Image (cartoon, rainbow, N blue to C red; front, side):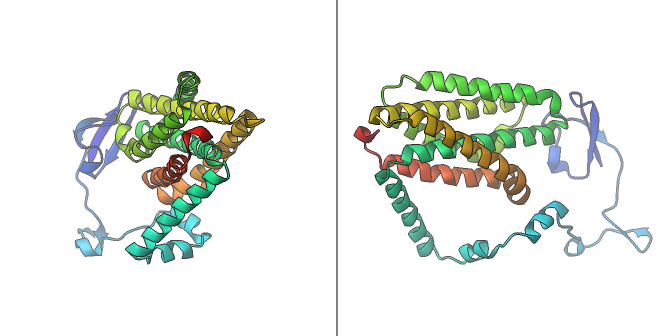
Length: 276
């Protein structure tokens, strides 16, 4: 059993899995071997079972969520062939075109940005808690970093000459960033950087979308965009905390959010510059 010490948390951590922290990471310093343990106890004497006999215990939290969830759609999607999956992707592109024809591409982008920003913020908070073992004394700093990033992003994007092109670049960058977040959260400064980046992306998207709607002369566009941003943030906070992270885990949750942004990017690519 390996022993680690985290000076920031003021606590020890013990594990039998060397690959979990190795020689020390995430703020945990390796102190050496605490003791030697047997994998299992059989018949009153220490005896390690064969690898095939090692019992696996399901996570009770995940099992509780799975009990009340209809997984029929998930199972059916797993049975799809490559051709059928390609057909579904083509249907998503048709949906993106419908958004463009209805003049809703910018609005959908803002709503999904609110969802993704809140999802990323919650993942950062949960990851910080699991990495360092404490959160409450840092939650204000992480939240302030997110808000500061939002202000910076909105300020930089407010007077951009080509808001549609900026939105497309931001959406593409978000799609590329989200799957990489778990590998970026390696130290406390990186946690703050990711929080600032999430806020900056959200603020920039809102400002660019408002500028695009303003060019189209849509009455009340700013208020509608703000309402959609709040609705997306509410949905993100609810779904990520209650369902997505407990069932899918943090990485798959980020992949799910990235898929939403892919559709948003596809919708934006169908919009002509004169429409924005």
